[in-house]
Image 1 (cartoon, rainbow, N blue to C red):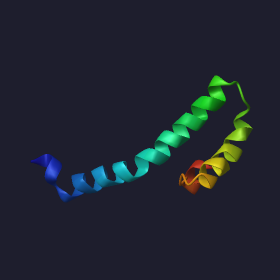
Image 2 (cartoon, rainbow, N blue to C red):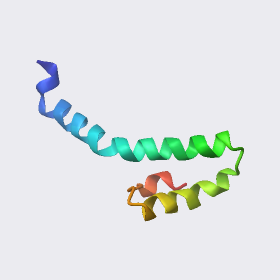
Image 3 (tube, rainbow, N blue to C red):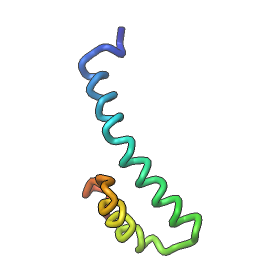
Image 4 (cartoon, helix red, strand yellow):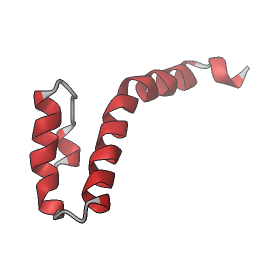
Length: 62
């Protein structure tokens, strides 16, 4: 079965580990857009996420 290969298992594991971060990033961006806030607040909100134990990769801080 294709879903049992080591590569597919690796992708599935990475997806499971990263999903909470992607969900938090999306929800943060959605909040900014929905509330018509300045996107300059995004970095500050990411800092708040990390303070609340949500890991955010440095790649998403640009």
